[in-house]
Image (cartoon, rainbow, N blue to C red):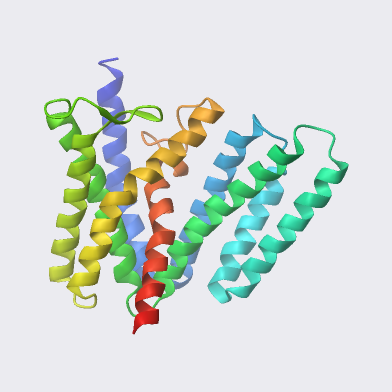
Amino acid sequence: MSLKQPSNLVQRVLVALVGIPLLLWLTWQGGAAFVLLVCVLAIAATSEFHHLASGKAAVLPVVFLLGFTLLFQLNLFVSLVAPFILIFLLYIGLLVREVFQTRGSRILNIGASLTGVLYVNISFGSLLLLRMDEPAGMHLVFLLFCCVWAADIAAYFGGRGLGGRFVQQKFFERLSPYKTWEGYISGVLGSFAAALVFGLLDPVLDLVPVLVAGTGIGLFSPLGDLIESMFKRDAGVKDSSSLIPGHGGVLDRFDTVMFIAPLMYLLLLFVRSGN
């Protein structure tokens, strides 16, 4: 065990050194580059969720789901109407399919297919919509990444440094036995600190909304990890895939971003409607 941990840590660091600059560069580029990034991530996440759900239900063929994901994300870049039409058609198609289906539970089959499609596409679609909001889009996505990473890092070191010293109860042991209240509080503070620095340095976004967003990310980001842990535990796997060395799959690495992006987009719509 002691030999594997450093190797895994080295993999994680090396992937981060390459992946984070690439992620930030594609976000900065925007346009077709960012759409390509979102499509690749969404397609990989859809494949991973299909793998998780296949052991529980007779889900739609993975090729069909991958095609749907690609169409959804590409159409979202053009119009908000087409993706909703796609979801409507998928829902009707799932109902008709189950009339002729002979395997598994009808409710589980529909639920597993629809949950995977909505979970992945609404999450990454929200990230795409955030980036498309000009001129603030790039700054909003950078803020999202910075606060999520700061919350993760602060929660990790805060939980290890303070875990069990003041609070004996785990944060959510049923789904994530290593999370502690110390880690959670440290994550909230880390996200707030990152938002404060970001807001003071960023020339586009106002400080108060940035602090609100940063605090919210810190408060709710653990839910993204817990939701993905819930899916993995139900499927009986440790990682969603081995696509990213040392990190697992896209669902493992982007679970928090996937949960926070729709909430942040809703916050953006709320702020826009109030102006």
